[in-house]
Image 1: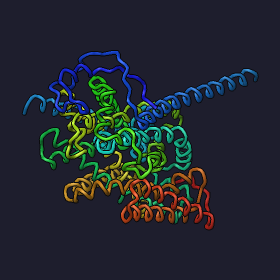
Image 2 (image 1 turned 180 degrees about the horizontal axis):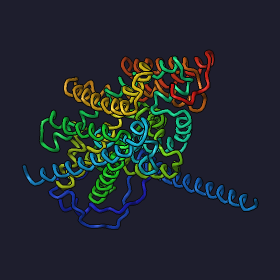
Image 3 (image 1 turned 90 degrees about the vertical axis):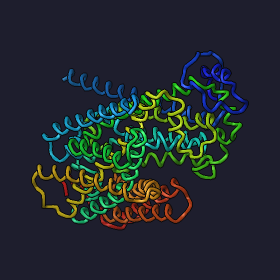
Image 4 (image 1 turned 45 degrees about the vertical axis):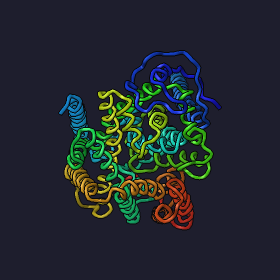
Length: 88
Length: 484
């Protein structure tokens, strides 16, 4: 499984500092800069990181779904109580 | 002293002042309450503060320093392993906390050892159970607390360029002051402030990494160093098989649901708190903090020849962050360590001043004011003891005993805390299960080479079976509502 494409940003910086193949430059003079935002598809192939990403999204979705489900349940219960009180 | 050091000291004093102020505010709230005010924040924690304190306590300095180091050394599998603590906390909040909370409110339990004693019927045997649970908590968590103080002191000393002893005194002194003033409320409120800082640090780190490296280049660089880093065929430090990493989920769930310094928070929630809302906050905080270990992979690609993998985060901050942000993030890492240390100190102190006191001298200290000051005094004494242990104990033993401590405590308490919430066993079952879990996990971690996951999980299995078996053959007494 491949991780989804994310915008790639550091290519220009890498070219500027003449990275050698297989290893990025160790001490970039200004490595924390945000030089450009290039819209280019790049991917990272790792089953571990893919699992991490999928599980993170699942965790967030699950917590959100649990929230909506319980809120709706609570709302329905309140409505039922109000209806019962109205009948009396 | 240069400009950045003045900036760091300024940051430190502003946050210290904020924390002591929060301690003072919570002490005002506590004075109006009984002992539960100090031990359980008067059962006043709402969804946001509850989530903040759970996540801040669960994600210690390991998440910011140890885990990036392990990722640097073993690869992406550590990112996944560390992540499992986030869903584990969410599951504990959504599907377990309400059961524990409801029973604790019914029985009036103020601590986990007291909960264990009351749910098993109280009485003389209940006092023995409470005493043993308190002793195990004190012994195992005091060691863990010492290792956390050591970590805080080391980082603080490097950050402020001061002596280790002075750093330890400074950091622990503030923790003692606000914990002593406000008890669990102070711990929870400061934890919430700290978790916001920790999440902010995670966001800054992720933005910096993703905006300065190309994912494809990152992948090819890591693969050129070692293809196992991204696509492991073994479980690396988790075991022989990659599937071993998934064992972290049950371990982390029990960590969140059973360990006294985590589970006591469930007792401190407001009775009408919306746990599903808290679950959302926990998931968001956890997702953000789970991204931090990626720093290990970033540094591996940029600086592949570090002599000590544990330096991955310090090197990252030094080489890839502007100095002002480096200072700010170091402060947030200190927060991560301190938020665990203050929770440990509060739990160890309450096990001493509340649980041991009730187990040994039930009818002494009747005055609520005296009881409150006993609790506060215990915080000071145990804080000083942990500080002395940090200064004089051998450092290599501390970190190792920290791991031994949490795993063994987990194995000791699974039956009496977790199983008893759904199926009530006997006091004898609880006593024997605690000893069985303690001995099994302790023995396996000390004398066998099974690793930090298998030892405690085996201890949990033995302890659970013992709890069920002994409870079935001994007399089970219904839980008592009043304090033993």
